[in-house]
Image 1 (cartoon, rainbow, N blue to C red):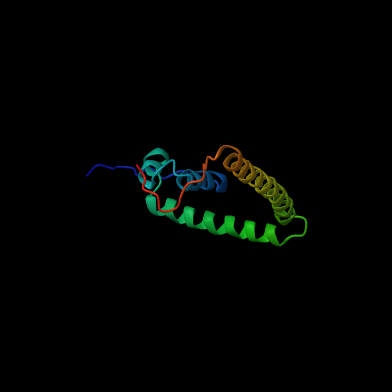
Image 2: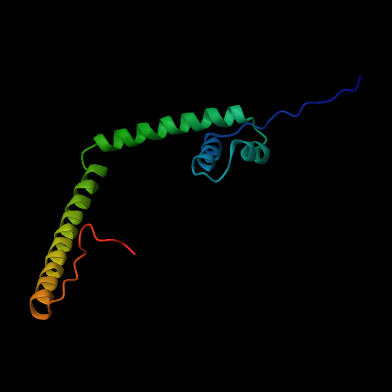
Length: 119
């Protein structure tokens, strides 16, 4: 009987495991692709992906609960979006008024009629 030595898989650091998990989560690689590339079992990769997802969600939850964290940025984003919404509403009112003027002065109704057949 020949003495075949089984190669021991190299120990991967936490950063390397996170990198592998991220490659899968980003949709770039399947478990099989990663197994071939890194020489680790799909079961290990699956376990790392689950752990990485859990760790990431804990980080997000804790950062949202901190004062001055992402919630502050969210408030600024909401204010900016409200300002943009106000501009869009004003623009819409302007266009509506232009359509009314066009109908009065030229007798042309450019608004789509409801229930009209589409060609």
